Image 1: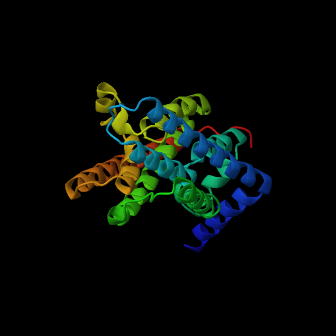
Image 2 (image 1 turned 120 degrees about the vertical axis):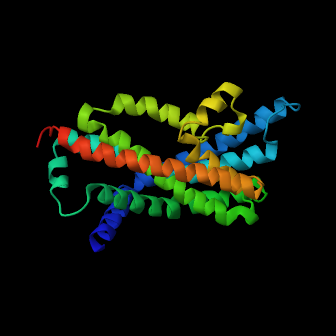
Image 3 (image 1 turned 90 degrees about the vertical axis):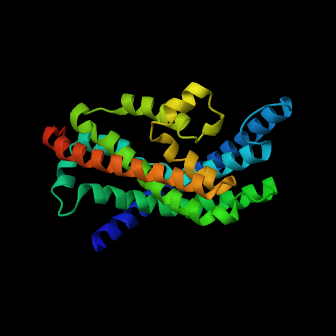
Length: 263
């Protein structure tokens, strides 16, 4: 257990090694959040009769919380595995007396913890002061936190599976770019999925993406019935199990196909 805690600390130190980059990232997130706020305000102000599932206030609240949550949910596992394979360092990682996937998860958790402290908390304070209204549904806060934990695991497993595709493909960045665009759109990170047109909404219902952002953020920001919350969290748990099985399958067969580059 101690060695995984050490890798969490490594993840924290790696993220903090370039202080200028950390500051620039924080400023970029503030600018992005402000742009989102202005964009959605302009959209609703220019279309006062807009018939959408979420009200103006609910949409702004959703976008703010989704942006804040995304600051620690972001996962660089795909790029890291790809670089390790291309450099040949993956060979050293695999012979260590520890589980490779648990090691990656530990580093990811370390990065997430420090991101919560230096990004999420300040962004939340700034957003509350600027928005001037409560961001969360207090009655559903516990369910929302549990849902975010499940979503965090789903996000990691999804990234791990795509990253391990490099065991076959060696270079995965073209695939990563394509899937990243689909993921950002369909997960509800940019646009609430409840605003999707009919056909896109039906297709997205059979994909895991909405379980990462749309479900937990909606639970935290919009009043819902108990049945709806249980249904959505059940969907998350189903996808967590499916991706867990897929990650084991990909790992067991992928490491046999691995071709080490460089070294």
